[in-house]
Length: 218
Ligand code: DX5
Ligand code: ZN
View 1 (cartoon, rainbow, N blue to C red):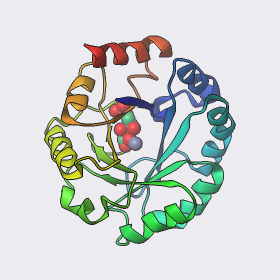
View 2: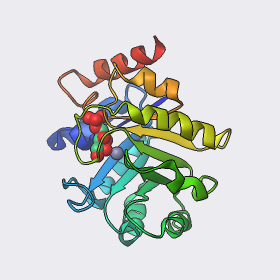
View 3: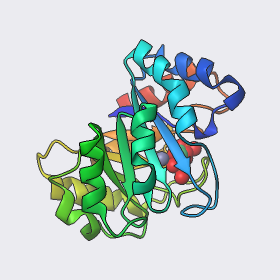
């Protein structure tokens, strides 16, 4: 399972330094939680932060993954693509035109993901599982880092893994992933784990990442 640190909980006054430190431990996927204060009750950042991290991502060979927790995401796909996102994920609850949004992301030359909130059924992605590179299952209610993983979503992860079969689609879990929960996420079939407060918390970043890897290896 790959780790995808979310910068939501990072210290934005030292963002580049903290992302570089994470990448120096072998991290090759950075998760960017974009929030508009409408789709979720929080505001985070937009394309300028993606643009500022692009040279760092190039230096370390890291993928920049923009998780758009915004309404009508089609309005900003080109901006996030131009800013340097490699993969752009939209919420199926945020647009009536998910198929078109995925096509737009691909037309911009980027990988496409779709995201589901905890209560949104898998049936909402049934018709696009052969179109996307990633499916993100929120394991908390979106908007904030540091929340507790919702255990019932792990059964949803297992059902998604069954639905996908051997399709080359990443299954991402996002929210509440810590050393105590990451093994269960992997056992359920998740292939990428977003880790925010577990990485950018009290512990030094290398130790925090090592703890997650140890928990996975156990
Ligand atoms: C919620 C965010 C968080 C973040 C991860 O909208 O998407 O899930 O990425 O936060 P932690 O790992 O601290 O739960
Ligand atoms: Zn996220």
